[in-house]
Length: 198
Image: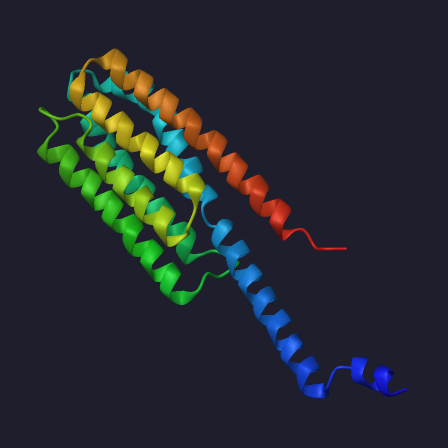
């Protein structure tokens, strides 16, 4: 009888365990919200990259990629800022505010670098996009976004070394395809994590 009474946890132990479980669940919910936030910039960036060869062919000239990103970058930034500002599942206020600021900085950076270096460095605006995605990767602790940020950085460096139209088209298509695949993976991962447990 004495051993049975010893196996029953004290009320304080039960309360402490319940509090720990609540903290774990709150952390899980926060990680799901953060994971759910990364697919959109990846997808929209991927679509912008895939559209780039057609649009730059219409613009024409060696500066076409820079001019494209000078305007596509801000549009991506505005779209991302709008997405983060209007999400039905709210992020923590600090994370949401930083996301909007990073999106705006990415857009402004792409615009300024695109206009300022259009003739000499077609990959310059892509660096602004890479930097913005890198900031999102750190903010959301996301390997998905980190991978796409790295691909943008490599793409920009390739475009600095070879300014041919063919090279820029290959960079845009490969980075865009990777971005879309990773966006889908992030979305599926989020859906899997968010499924209710039995």
